[in-house]
Length: 112
Length: 112
Image (cartoon, rainbow over all chains, first blue to last red; front, top):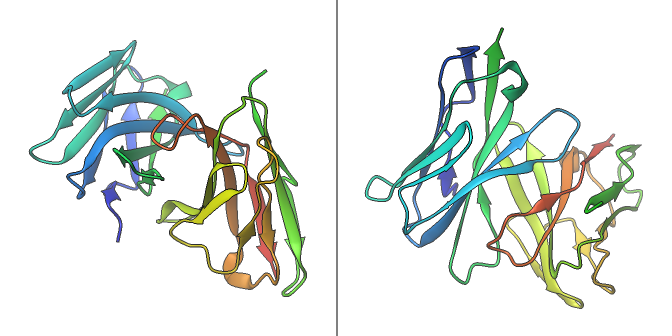
């Protein structure tokens, strides 16, 4: 039972345009959400996070939006750069959880 | 440099031959975890450890063992590997389970 879902396995955008990666979750007890980025032959690295008390968090070109009523979050990358090409994982955890739940990942390709 | 190291990075073995994948972190993190990454399934947790001598099962623990005798090390043991354990394995550590996790570079295991 996947509690965190990324329904788009892949996304391709042109350099300079916006990339929007989506993530849905089913567990209403999740209160902390993260995005990780993974390059080939490397482990995932933390990108940005958001707490459930917020609906937006911004860090440079990366913004995460959280819609709690829809149980949906999204990662916006503006402007997209070829170096952003990677697999992006959405993750979530709840208070008292002993683990973090990950989505299946979305492969982003940014074309020059 | 803060890091999580895993060894080996690549391993090809045969069914039934016991193997150990080592994991070590230098950040004094209490929480450590093992994941496997499979196409379309994302990162699934195998085992986790809240502290020395405290380990517990994740979502897919069958066929795996772990130990946590020292804070920095968290080896993953496959007593009798089978082909369905062919996967990409990641070790991770963090201050606590709900926080940003630091991942190792991954171990690609093939069981013939």
